[in-house]
Length: 132
Image (cartoon, rainbow, N blue to C red; front, top):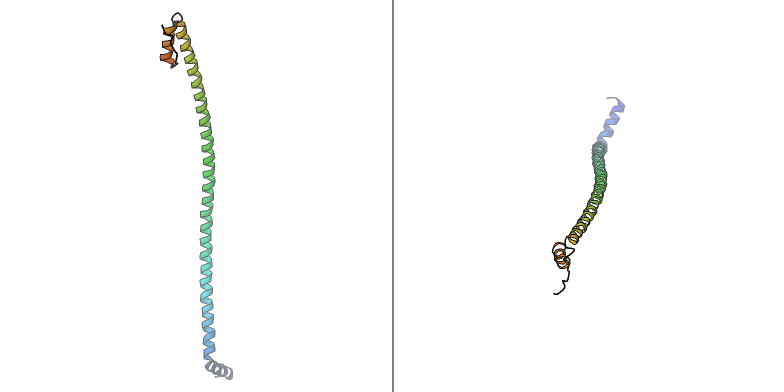
């Protein structure tokens, strides 16, 4: 052997624990660095999935808000249409009652007692009849 190789061999035999420590530390560093890179990649993948799900949730909330506003507008329109129908029906009923009262008054113009009885029956008016 050459003197340089002989010296390296002697140095290795004398300090084999130090050499073993360097090899173990290097191997451990490479192993943990590789797992850390895999961990970082997994963490990034999980974060990307989370961001996609979060975007879906935000989109669903926006769609729900728009649908809620549309439903409120439809409710307001329906309520106003129902109010118009109710007001119209009340006016028609009032006109119908007025016409019926007018007809009864013309029909029983000569008989006030008969008129009072008919108004009491048909309209629910409480009319006190004169005593005879």
